[in-house]
Amino acid sequence: MRMVDLIARKRDGHELSKTEIDFIVQGYTNGTIPDYQMSSFLMAAFFRGMTPTETANMTMAMVASGDTIDLSAIEGIKVDKHSTGGVGDTTTIVLAPLVAAVGVPVAKLSGRGLGHTGGTVDKFEAIPGFQAEISSEQFVRQVNEVKVAVTGPTGNLTPADKKIYALRDVTGTVNSIPLMASSIMSKKIASGSDAIVLDVKVGAGAFMKDLDSAKALAKAMVDIGNNVGRHTMAVISDMNQPLGYAIGNALEVKEAIDTLRGEGPEDLHELCLTLGSHMVYLAKQASSVSEARSKLEEAISSGRALETFKAFIAAQGGDASIVDDPSKLPVAAYRIEVKAKEAGYVSEIVADSIGTAAMILGAGRATKESEIDLSVGLMLYKKIGDEVKPGDTLVTIHSNRETVDDVIESIYESYTIASGKVERPVLVHAEIH
Ligand code: URA
Ligand code: CA
Image 1: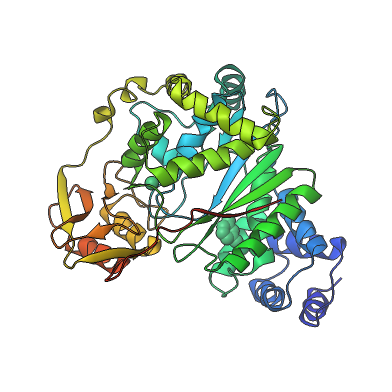
Image 2: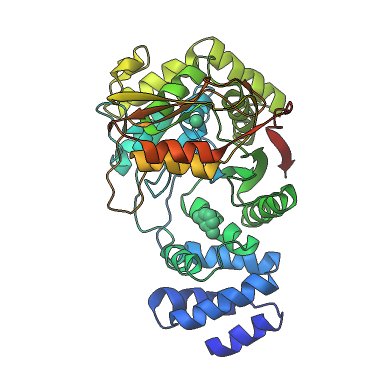
């Protein structure tokens, strides 16, 4: 087999076989296929697309390129949740203890990664004492005992995806539905869960800017999962503004605690109940999605969700008293209010640029080497549809430096204030099965 022939076949719109796709993925991973040929293939796939069979084969070839996690020592149906992008997305911190509280085993492998705020692991590390680097024995034992554990990057999962994604990033081939779907799903499948709930974001701050493309990405991922025996569904949720009020690591932990107490922001609360009820249903801990939702509501109102969060924090060496006293979380030295200059209604908060504002404060990593400041971030006081008057606080900056003109500028850039009334956005646009 020659790579040049496979590139030409893809260029001409033919379907490649499993053997051919294995050849490409293995060859690129082990270095026998050079960057220039792989780039050319990716661009051909970008324009020609890939069939569902090719996409599933691409996914499984990337899974086979590295280690896979075996969660079979954990009792019950393990359900994972994945959100495609999004800013200040606190859902994982809420959902892990929330669904665990109704009996769903949560075995969460999470990255640190680059981005506006830290990854899930960084956020949990805002809890004093919390240890994310736990042994695989503890991980399994803890999920069996308290139903939830979170661990940092383990093993060498999907090295093919790492290499291909890095190449796509510099060759204009990120935004291809089959390439994105196989990239995301390869990582989910390698992490070993039995079922997967996807939260596909749509809007200005997301990979997918319009509902049709978000639905197409969701469908491609759902088909891959179901084709390879992992029960998968997707919820399409709005990302025309960040979810909740908090963007930043400790601030999001505090927001998650409020939400687990039933006192969180409306949109975050609603999305967690929606995603959570599908997780509970796929884990067969309820006989319908609406029964699952009632169970989650009960876990919040009875305090069981918070108790589970405490047990989970304590099991990983963290100080569980932060749940009753969040002032023990890292706190930034300065609070600076950003005020509205004009009257009107908030019509847009570009999640990307407000996320960048949080990142330049130090809440996220610009490069792999950057250190995260867990205490800093932003609290949004006005969201889409809210009325504002000049002088009203839009955002409070939590900072460890006194001068934050660059951050303030990014915040003003991300907010659009319209003169007339603005509807609040729909939060959940569709479900894809
Ligand atoms: N996230 C991924 O992991 N892969 C993609 O291709 C796009 C987003
Ligand atoms: Ca948030």
